[in-house]
Amino acid sequence: MKDKLSTRDAAKKMGVALLTLQRHVSAKTVDAPPLQKVGGVVHTHSTYATAWAARGEAVPCVITAMADEFGGEIPLGPFALIGSDEIGRGIVSTLTGHRSPAVLMRSHGVFTIGRTARDAVKAAVMCEDAARTVHLAQAYGELAPLARDQVDALHRRYTQEYGQRPEGM
Image (cartoon, rainbow, N blue to C red; front, side, top):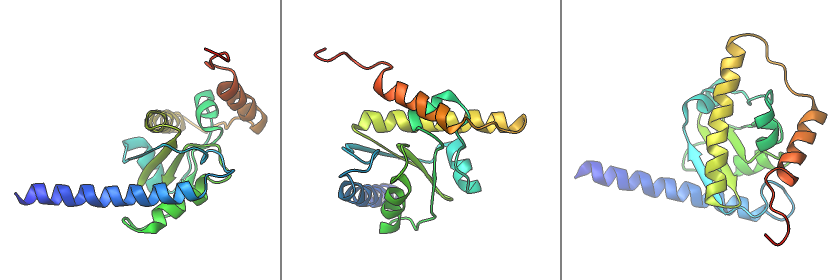
């Protein structure tokens, strides 16, 4: 019985943390992409992305999939105490000014946002995939980040042209 109570307590605390994050995100959604129209939030401790967070490093943008999905590096947010408002504030302050829907919170894990829960889940999956790929690339030698103009062109194409439905469909 004790295990069930502790699981419930943990779920309650996680729910409070996500609600706090949603409140901070909602307060900043006026003109700050990607914080506009946030309808979903995901939090994970996925292996590779969390390893980058544990090292205190953003994941550099070295592959086209990252430019497409994140519009650059996957940024690193500050360390924040679990269960406090610091997490929500840290996520919002880190994502403000970034196109990335994902943030690595230092020594913690990944938080992603999206227009829908499905979009936030996709960003979390893509974040882990990119973190793993870049980790493996780094193991074989020096990374070669994409140039800013290349990242901008790839991100624009991905978000405005690639896979977009024509008006009325």
